[in-house]
Structures are given as structure tokens and as C-alpha cells.
Image (tube, rainbow, N blue to C red; front, side, top):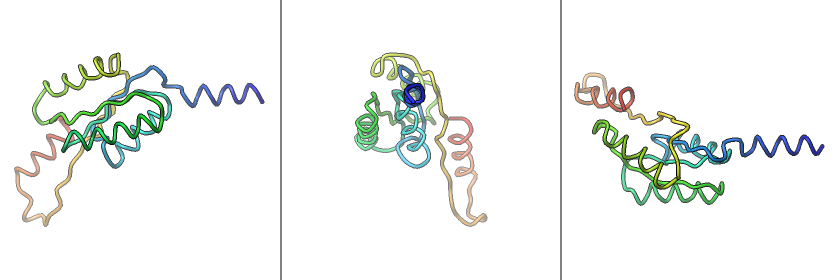
Length: 132
């Protein structure tokens, strides 16, 4: 029984000391992924679009629930390499280390009748969902 408890405890915090960066993690599936990684002991860069204070609230909630460190980022992934580098730098400065786990979860959709679907909307979807 003691061995089973010890193994369960080691699995429960199996990502302790690791840092995860999860794009699109301020809501939805990404939030679920970030929460599970934190529950396993990983520190997490929580990323989303919108107001940084709202994303920070999500990061603080995850950190408190799972007793890990979390930091918020609203980096615009459509702006090339610099925002991505800034998130990696944020991982180093706020969480104390490099990104060990990367989850590219950010994604958008555009819902409208096909005849109203513009090339601009299509290109934005491809830029976020595939390139970012």
C-alpha cells in the first residue's frame, strides 16, 4: 500500500520543475491543458488574446489551485518571431527556466455563409491555426 501511495504521489507531480507554454490557454481546451499540466506540477505560461489582466486572472487561478508558478502573456502570434521570443524570455524571467513543454493550441474560426467567407478571413485563420 505504501509503495502504491508513493507511486501515485510521484505521478501526481511528475512534471514538477518543468515549464509549459500553452498558446490559447486562457479559455477552452487550452485552459484545460494548462490546468492538467499544472496539476502535474508544471509551471505554466498562460497565453491568450485580449486584455492582459484577464489572462493574468486565469494564470493566478491556475497557480493557486495547483500550487505552481504561472505567468500571463497576450503576445500577438501574428506578429512574427518577436512575440514568441518574448514569451520564451518571460518563461525564463518569471518561471526560472526554459520552456520544456510546448503546446501549440491557439486557434480561431470564422463562421459565416460560404459565399461571405473572404480571402482575408481565410488567411487570418491559416496564419493563427497553422503558422502561429
